[in-house]
Image (cartoon, rainbow, N blue to C red; front, side, top):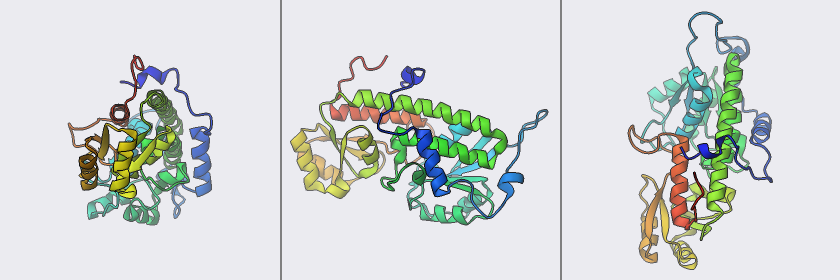
Length: 317
């Protein structure tokens, strides 16, 4: 796997940023985003269970995640101590999700609900916040002061911060596994730092710093790595065509699985090809697409390297 190159060395993190742990913990406390109100059982009741010293393990903690990357993150941190439900499921667009009766029941049964927040899924947010017993965590407000773009998981630094917030929420729901959750969070942060380091080293030696996309899903990631994302949805076709011409871009990007007539129009007028970037909102169907957050991020980097004309000779072992 590509990221293993930097796993032990711990990739370079930008000096102008606080640590992910400090950022996420501070935001979490300020926003009051740990376990939801309405019950004291998080401290002493059914959710506050510890593993027995002898005998069978107790059932894993049931956690519902409102989008695929968060389901991946919770699963990575919790390991066998959590049972994670990806609420939308494969092939379903999660933004603005309309809940079915079965999905409402999954939210009701969960010990913890982890969702994006800031209006990404209004029905999910309302349901999570009104359930009387469940804990809930809005991940985006915990790691960023900006509510847009919603796809914060495309910035590995913000995902590292989310790992800290999720570990704290899991620990509040199941204090007996606090150490395991903390270890899982630290392991994820180490890999996220490796991803950030590889993005930094690969994207710092490119012919271009501008790229054109369907919408602003990649805006946070672009800012993190000193790139400029020009989304057709807000800039308009004419401005996007001008950007392609001015910077002599070899290709523009659509979103994986999301058709865009405007992107096609830009490509036709500018005379360039269209490549696909995966914003990782939708869980892939079994046997298709990237199998994990890390492999999906590797695919994103590889696609950007081609579109930006990056010189990656000798960058990876």
